Length: 109
Image (tube, rainbow, N blue to C red; front, side, top):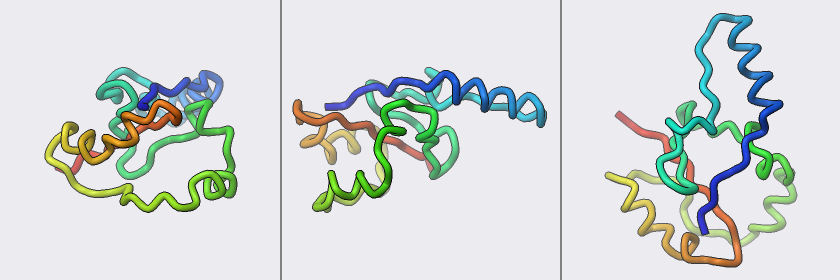
């Protein structure tokens, strides 16, 4: 099933402060602009989803992730014309009530 992630407000505030100090614009990945629908985020930085901004994604190390998902062979990247195509491709994960997923998208113009 797709879920929305919990923003890490401490990390986000730190990023706002850095942006302010160096005079650049920053909008947290958890901002409503980036949430396309439940559990589907448009990446705020091309090809770089800022995982550190979400509590759930800070829990597992990369090593732990490979232990949990050792045989996950579905291609996790590709090109689609719209979100519906992505949802159809990930239907099995979306319908899975035992596990939680998020999808991160990067638009290509």
